[in-house]
Length: 232
Image (cartoon, rainbow, N blue to C red):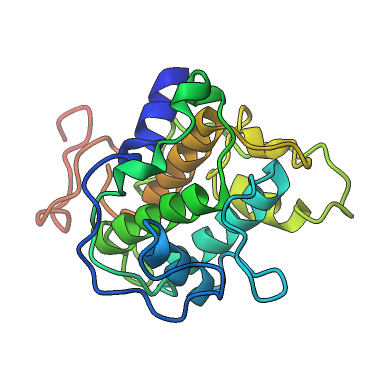
């Protein structure tokens, strides 16, 4: 199960570069020809990642706390149709960095790679997940996803409200690396798990299909009375 979290979360981290037009509204320190330019433009424009004195500083590693705050912002936008993105396309190969320095799983995630992961995941979710109509039956909630995790961090922690949102939406499980929102760098393996849990939680909340309380699948015949177990 542990490996499945990682693999699902990093499915978006490979593929051919996007053929979108040149990114606009870029920070001063991000060239328009940079491999992460489109994603940087998107995450900044959507307010998921902020600038430092007008600069993105994409080579800096991302901390557990920064990742928790950013993933919560993105999750909130996706829940409320607020993400403004692009067509769903794979991430560029250059997102995989540091292999020559050791196993990729242990490599810290830079802001450039982080931006690409977030933007690509957001586009896939926004373009691919259905949205239940208002007042839809709550029949699709998974019994497999873990229950809401109890937070063990102080309310004053800068990431507390972000983690409340993620855990209540079951977008962060009890083994999430985000639950220790410290200043240490988040690794590629940890990021993979965090993204996978976010996607599974969003899918659980956004998909209206499921089973009726009697175990039958919802379909166009739902308005017909179901036979009782004794055949009457």
